Length: 254
Image (cartoon, rainbow, N blue to C red; front, side, top):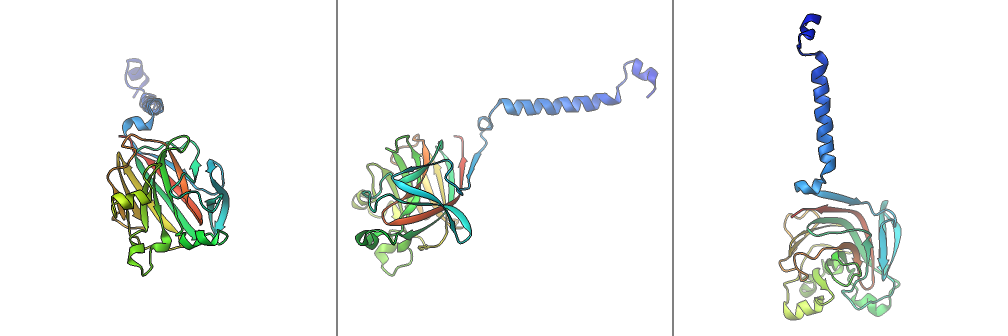
């Protein structure tokens, strides 16, 4: 194109590049102005759990740990026993969960320093609390009893995974009023890393173990209802030392 063509209003070779840059800038500004959640996109949080930052202990002792080369958080009760199915956990500061998926690697063992009676009934109780309110007075939980996973006793094998809803719905009430509906079996054991995935939608929750494609427990009526939201906690119970690593939370907008 000649100088005369440009003077007559023909296209400049710079015009295309300028228009392209303007379009890119406008697109970036548009995305910054509206949170991703507004578009219905998943929001992912990753908690490596390699130090105590972002954790608040409630009736538990917490410390960094190195188990077989894997960095993790160690959680145990401050006392041997706190009533069972209680609000004993390390809460993730600022966590606010409604619907989505929670995944974590965990390992539990019976605490050798616990009182002998507690050691006798301890099963390596370990799991996750979710939708916990600020004072931990209400929350949902799914947890494991790994010591029951491979024993010969058929009755104990039926009590490996458990749902409870604090404060009113503990395992003993469920066994009395709805035996077998809120617990089940899983092929797991003490002193081994177990991958746990919990999927929550409304008042429905499913628990998956390791690479299993089918849930080992399905709850269709979370007792605090579909709109309860709140924090996520690393939960333990009597006579248990637990390790937690690699926590990922995926929030899904309704």
